[in-house]
Image (cartoon, rainbow, N blue to C red; front, side, top):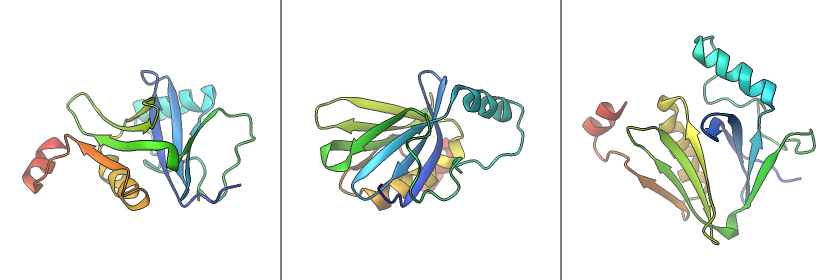
Length: 146
């Protein structure tokens, strides 16, 4: 079982119908899917602005996360990736993981203020794969994008 050093989440896919936590280890990344019930609860908490831990995952400390608990997951081997890109745009911020074969999975960042935290985590863990698109280069630009 890999030892995960960091985790970010929740992130969303499939037009907001699926929620995920992204778990980062040195040689692999796991996208761990929330159950349907957990996704609905999370969406309701966010819609009604119930206090939650934005950016926190359902795991607490990532450590060695259980992947055998009946949840779906996506597995990425870091050596088989072309890029990990954070995109900032008016339509929404997201993280895209692209494999060497060209397949890509996009995870939307629902809570925009977390984008900076996600950027820092990804830059620190995977500097050779990390890329950005639409990220403002100046402080004034970053303030206007919030």
